[in-house]
Length: 196
Length: 190
Image (tube, each protein chain N blue to C red):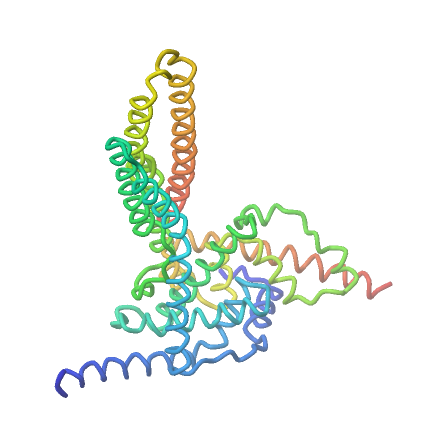
């Protein structure tokens, strides 16, 4: 039984009969635009790595300046950690145009893949975002106390507050990401519900 | 590369180009209507249409006829436009609703409708712009005259689910636009 009212049918006709601007592109124009588009994406992704480049330059300068071996090892580990982090950001979160096979995927399939990618990145934040920086920071802390043994006389004034502060920040970041990952999982479950 | 290697590549490119031209000729106007459903700003909308056309051209490299041209074109268009909306959501912090919530929202256009100041297409777009991408796709497909099965193939929902959403769409449209017609009738009588 058709439960479509005359008014709704009228709206459909109104919709389909709309005047459009006539935006059209020839194949040559599309090819030229595709090239410009790709270069814009590359520029956008490159800007996201500026912070990493600045940090590597800073730690590289400190590495060159440092005389102590442990401090140099600490800075070298920080540089390695930042490079690893930047590579992971590129692999997990850089913005890319829709894949060429976008027509093979329904919206649900395409959206699901995106949500899963983001969820997995958030769930593994310790492995690829916080973790890589720990070796360098730990080594620099060891090198600092080795060079300033006087500070160890009152560890509770420095070591404990620093350790608590770092643990709190890390826990907070991990907790926020875990909550965000749960929300994404909820969206994935809602999408799956709609396919049944 | 010798001529025998160049020719298949050239043929593949010609095929992609001609498929694109065919799709643009048949679905060009529908793609503009679809873009309007996802983007209200005229300049951003023109960019979105171009983005869809670029994605369509690129996608034909992988088109092997396993689905109809219409399904392919609408999948590319909706996925591109939905991606655009997701980016805009992050920038503009917009919140969208589903069809069920839209049915329950009060009709804020009653006053303007009674004054006859808004045309129906503008009101239709206002409704659509409130919807989450998935429900927006169902609404647009319905207005384009597609049945539940075709819409389900494009979007990836079950046909049963799409049919339920279409039923909801009819209710929302009837309620909003019949009420408006009634108010206009009352005004004319006065």
